[in-house]
Image 1 (cartoon, rainbow, N blue to C red):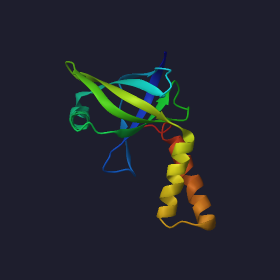
Image 2: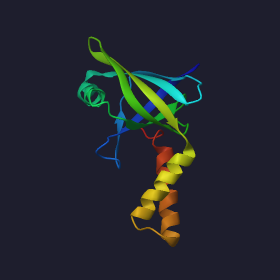
Image 3: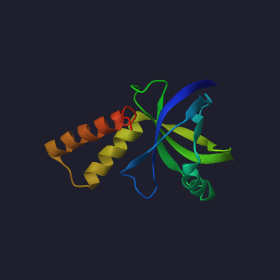
Image 4: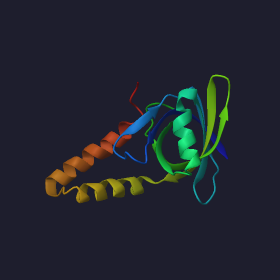
Length: 145
């Protein structure tokens, strides 16, 4: 297993795939289990203000897509499909453990392209919008609050 520092995290709400919410991290770790299923564990340490969000996801056993930037802010974010494994409350903060599966870059590009075709883009407009959205996805982890 390998452990990495988590430097930023955005979560895509199941009801709003277009907007991703920046999660203000107090600290975080990403652990690569190095298995055939590409499974990871992600631990985030956050303020209790996120309790409702993560408790709802946990009780619904809801899968959620996240974009995690590892090690340095200028790294491209990695996309994971996650479920909430546990929530541990502390005095003023909370620790959340996520089970995660790494989603490959080809999966992301295919999803963006599928969405654009369904939205009616074609020809040069399709190409330009694809480039824009892929670029937007790469800069998610670089943005600051």
